[in-house]
Length: 75
Image 1 (cartoon, rainbow, N blue to C red):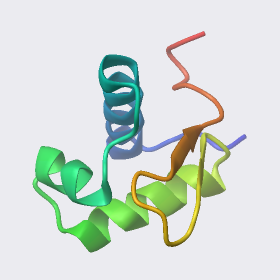
Image 2: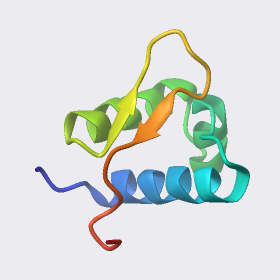
Image 3: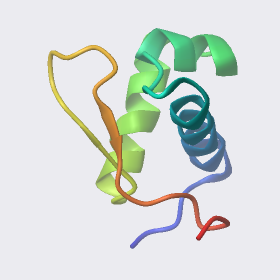
């Protein structure tokens, strides 16, 4: 499995924390707001993280992010 960039690692940790705290994943807009990037930038990060095998996303569904593997620092 390919390693995540530093920014991708931060995004994955944010997603993991939100799921743990709220019980459901953040929206793309919430990810963008957290990292002060556009929704398109957040979407691109999600797709890169998905391609590397850490998450799965589903089209046309809000909050459709499923964790497959946590960050490299977590078990």
